[in-house]
Image (cartoon, rainbow, N blue to C red; front, top):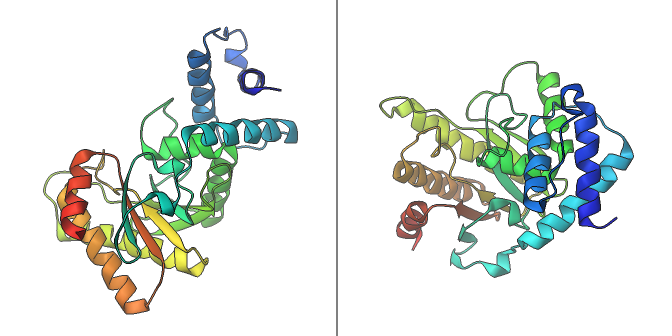
Length: 257
């Protein structure tokens, strides 16, 4: 099957899973098909599916991720020894681990085609990631506390692992507790990365989006926590601060150059 045939196969299979969607018409336009496939993946609850679907999905997503362009450490500028800033889509990074700003449910974003990092990571990793996260949460037996971290395979993403952490939500005035919890996110991610032999980790700007943590203060905490961790432990892990907005790029450039 070529990519178009694979996409149609996946759409048809996901529609078949949803009794209410079985009469939905598949659009002829390729971009609209891509949107439909992503939407169906986003709303799908955690669950097993047959090997044929997984095989076709994996082939399809691997090609999609290649077409987006894989980025390695050699494509980035080393700002300080073992420290990098990179602006762009974190799902393109071929590093040891990327950090996902998750919610307390830990199974991803269910809003179709939402532009949050949680949605993007689950979309391009494949449906296996949601099921893996769900099994972790079922075994844990309670929602993920803010400031901790979990590690999973990355499945179809170029990186080896995804590290999921729940950042603090700032409603109103920023407090010391918010700051301590955000520092704990970075600390927990670095610890679990080193425990699993991860050689490089890409951090998104945890909590600065819909969780409303002030961007500059968040970056200051990120850099301080990273430096203190590396000094205290002697860790040689390479750290990439992945930014998406010009504002965050300017802040990290100011802090690190």
